[in-house]
Length: 403
Image: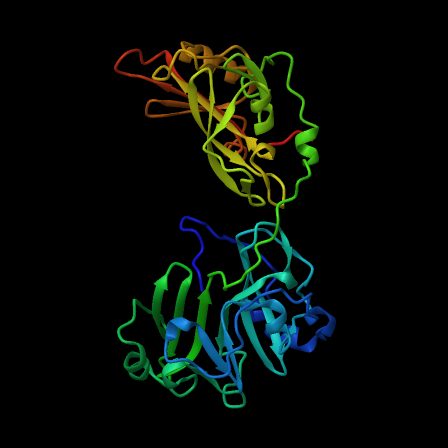
């Protein structure tokens, strides 16, 4: 197994997993065999495992007479289990996103973590199953279908002494009202949780996840097409009169944020230290340096599309310039606000539009509403040691694409 690049953040998605409270209703409804049909087989995947290993961190569990090792391909898991009727096997899952869904076999139910570790959005049935939650306290009969883990740990029979003898001291312990949870963690998203219930001192629930790429995993390819949101971008011809309007002037050129990297390249900026074929995964963020007129600027660029695309098709959503930067770097917002603007004028302009203003230490934030503050705002910094009423840095952010 090979690890994902450090620093990747996984996004949890709601994939309509059936909660335990709704189990009885779900059991009464029919499940669909079509939902569990396999997608095309991948070229490479994890090797088939027939016997449990001795290591907990191989992330294996034996259910009945079948050994499962995580992560595994969705279609391999779905060959033995039926997807719940409330789940959609064609639902799109974004890159580095995961969610929990339900599978059934007879009267037994398990909840599994389905994750997309590729660079493009994928349908649910082409993702990886990277974890499993088996709850014998509610909706899984371990007397009829035995569940075993490495080291001879058996659900419904083993207790904490057995678990400790097999794996050593837990990484963490949590005392609940009905159970004690013992967690064994190898790394982030590489962990196993054991729930030992207090009524009979036995293991009744296991929650395992291993969000690591399997050997030979195909992350997908990068499309060479220019997304429509990039090709339809048009640079403004003038600034607006609203300081939160997307039109601004940066280093002598007009942009409407968010603006594609290609617009900056057309204005003479050059990407620095970017390899040929570099890309950003779907709905992902990357940091790049661009240079113009001997000035190097660090940009965060975002891919608004669901699929991987070239750096130049990503968007700059935020710009900032301060009086600590070179005089060659300039930023003027709509309304003409730039370095040297007065705090009173900014507040007056915001109040005229009915915008919110809040002061946080040396910063003044202006935004339309609390709900839009994250997506669209202007931020001004005032150097209290020099002039607490004069703008010393200007930052503008807009994540909203034009309709």
